[in-house]
Image (cartoon, rainbow, N blue to C red; front, top):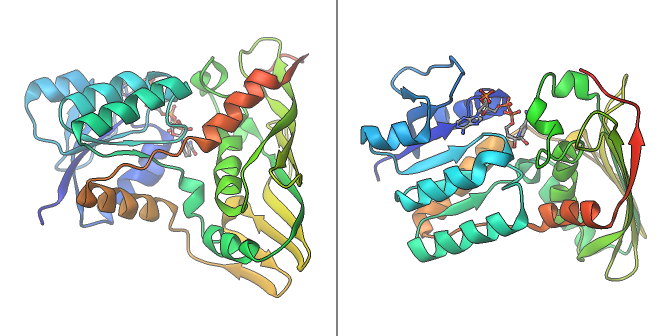
Amino acid sequence: MSPIRVAVIGLGKIARDQHLPAIAGNDAFHLTALVDPSSTSNVEGAARFDTLEALFDDGLAVDAVVLCTPPQVRYELAAKALARGAHVFLEKPPGATLAEVAALEEQAKISGFTLFAGWHSRYAAGVERARAWLADRRIERVSIIWREDVRVWHPGQTWIWEPGGLGVFDPGINALSIATRILPRAFFLRSAVLSTPSNRAAPIAAEMTFTDTAGVEIAMDLDWRQTGPQSWDIVVETDAGTLKLANGGAVLELPSGVERAEDREYAGLYAHFAALIQNGRSDVDTAPLRLVADAFLLGHRKTVEAFDD
Ligand code: NAP
């Protein structure tokens, strides 16, 4: 089969760090075009455009587009690409609202093209092992601690502080993408406190409590003001001891010992995208975005000290 001709839209941090190497490392794909209004990144053999319209006007053949832009502009780009007959891979979060993602899902169904809402953290090395281990255990309590320094991880990213940018839920939704994969039962929000700097539209910290359908409590602590050691940990207490998924899912600590494996998050995403296209299927799980939207629906708001980069 000839390779899937792919265009990457939005050449920021994640496109350069992860998508371009993952495409280069997968023979099922050929990088045909790059689209960004300002980035100067180039890849030999790939055409450069400032806009998606310019790419389509040029008539260059592409089979798939990968949207690595901020979420606020993703719907229009995805709808246009599906309408032009391209398969679409959405970086996380899949959109700025749940309704626009549902509209895209419907459009993909009608058009017959693949829509893939990727959750990269679900491909972290320890996630599937954790899911399998938890399947047979009685879960007593879950703690999610996602504390990082926004100045280190998101310097100068203004979109992340705007409506639709999610603020601290931009990394926090990765934790929820893992939790919704590894925990055996559905869970939902009970309470939330969102702390938003007085000069920003999106929260810098959030404390939440969820319960699952059996009444087990899931506590979540998200904070972007962390300096020193950073935490991307999920701790699950069970009748057979404690499971800890550390480093964003990369390291699995079980009562029997610690397991680490090579990072294959984006390799895993692209293998799945290729399989979806080959099988004529879509994969759009909005569960993590639903939980974040619920925090904005149900959460108390607290205004905190102004934040500057
Ligand atoms: P970023 O560094 O700000 O990059 C976004 C890029 O998209 C910028 O170059 C931006 O150009 C470009 N862009 C904006 N509007 C566009 C449009 N209409 N057409 C084409 N390009 C457009 O952001 P990022 O960190 O890569 O994050 C992008 C997405 O990936 C986010 O949803 C984020 O949650 C997700 N993600 C990020 C990471 C990470 O570690 N950074 C990890 C996983 C997933 P301008 O700068 O000129 O606006």
